[in-house]
Image 1 (cartoon, rainbow, N blue to C red):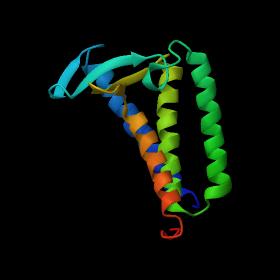
Image 2 (cartoon, one colour):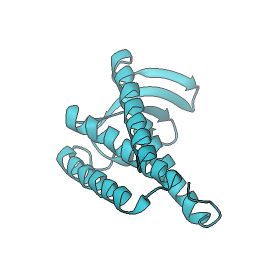
Image 3 (tube, helix red, strand yellow):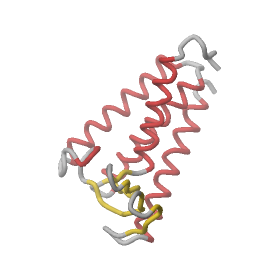
Length: 151
């Protein structure tokens, strides 16, 4: 299968994101949590009705529309341009998996479950980490293009 890496990473990233969010909502009361590194990092369950850093709060319909367009565009891009490059497939799958995880939250719950609480930054989730990791991999690919063989 030509896009095997993409589909495997996509499936696993959505599965991991949703499993962790399920656990957080089941075992941690809303607006509660516990400290992992005192004063720096906690697990705190919150509901985010906005986008990154809390922007566009309460605009769930807009965020669903933007997310769905982005996911469709990304799938089109992967199928049209990535071919057999497993590194880029994995990067795109992480971005698509993270976007899909948050999209599923918006559709099913009306908000996104966030829980990683960096006290001096923001509260975010596994899907956000996947998106950032995928973008980082794309940047690495751009910086080292030609030095890395397509796999």
